[in-house]
Image 1: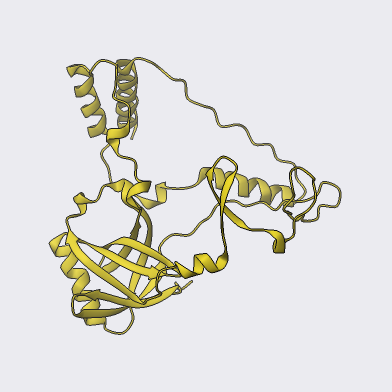
Image 2: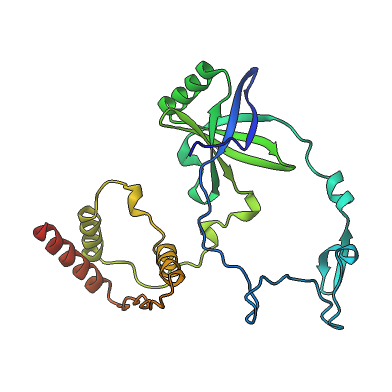
Length: 261
């Protein structure tokens, strides 16, 4: 199935503009269930209800409120929100180029593909330049009444635009509690390094599967045919407290598997 563009715009780098199309790079495959009544197996609707009286509140009687103090709200109308929306635009402006390692991983949010929309020579020249220079562009744009900041990168001669989180959404590692236990011994560090070397390999996208979704969909498929299959619970692994023993068991297991292979 061919990918469909979800937005069109222009990539601006100073005085240079490159027409582009935006494509989704990921899709949500979560299992979703409908809410049915137990008697007739019909879909049920959700209604807004006053918790004190139990009476239903119609859409015309509903307002948006932001709680500034317990029980105290600031009422905001749709007109209020529309008046402060960012001005719509079709430009993705690149502010600067930075080394990828300057952007910590926790800042990245959702990836999109940027495809060419006419000027293919300028598009692929930029993609190759980013790959050779090893740089990512800091991008700013407005899409569907929302402002975004993102990182523009090149991969396999194509451009990828990844939205970045806002500063108030990212938790710094400095905010984490400091370890209170002892430092690992030299032996434990060496064993950990050996374990890492035994697990070295290649990235294979086929290894990344949603086992839970596959089990649920297989269960539903069998049950739809009139069967009543039973699923065994996934067993949890026992926890051990000794780092030495955990590393030793892992190394022994990997060595045995390599010999068998």
